[in-house]
Length: 448
Image (cartoon, rainbow, N blue to C red; front, side):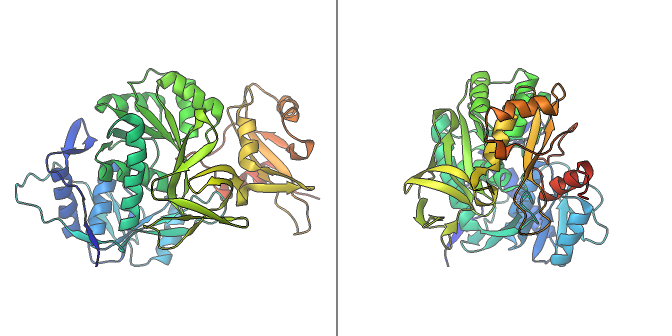
């Protein structure tokens, strides 16, 4: 059976994380991992609820060492956790808080005071390539969250490919700060596995407000990589806070507009790289948004098309991975993204993408946030119709529609366009399908 060390490339004295104003070595990290592994009850699944990225990583690797699968959920709302617990009744919860989120769920406190200081040589666990380490749930932006399983070999290879691409952009391994939670696929890959497997170090913090991003970056040694989303980057640009020097920005979870990418690069004086991927596939490709629309796959990943379906192939994939997107294939490693299959709308024979329409909306002057979505059809025979929710304190709906009318075919104008105070996005800047359904129910009068 093929195996890998739990921490490949282990160097005891090398830094792996930064937490509470101190650097943590790989040896300290491994001792915390193995100490927690000894305390884990015998089970098949854990909910890793740690918000501190260091303790999340300790809990993840301790679970891997025991052969336990981590259930990484997008929402920690009690009703969502209760539903998942019903599906995985053997699961225990891991976290830093003193009391469990759900009384009926067994709970283990991960964090402890201080770090293990023993000089006893470590017994590094060997992990089978095929061992399943995580089931990661989709965000629910297109419906009920779905779980996707990942093996140790696959996650390791993806992290190494991402490190090769990003370290090449920067010139070497980086200190990584993420504004995204590690329970999300992008956050897991880019803020935990990328630095751990790629030889960088990661910050334990998950800042949200611009001033907190600035202070968290200032704690880290250079070169620094900021992992974020278009939603968070827009907030950073609007705040105009002074930030320490950043060597690169990595963005995902939503399309990054050319205008925002240019603004980020101008303010940070650093290359801004956008990731293409999904919860189902993990990261597959990147592009430098300001340099063009073409995506380049990671080393070892190729694409092929069969009619309208595109698949990604790699040695570490169990089988070809189907893309849920419409792409124009330029070569086995280069492509242009035309839109998500689930994102495409067809109104009286004319096609467009909700992501494209959202970008047009967000780029309008005076629009702080906004989203296009479809009306709920009363029957399958009903024609698709669009509506939009917009946050634009200084604009009226009539003014916004006038601006949109100059950019899109009239069939894609939202009817209605509803101005609201804010859009309740999650920590990744996404809007769940249930959230959109609630907005429709709240703001739209029922048909009579």
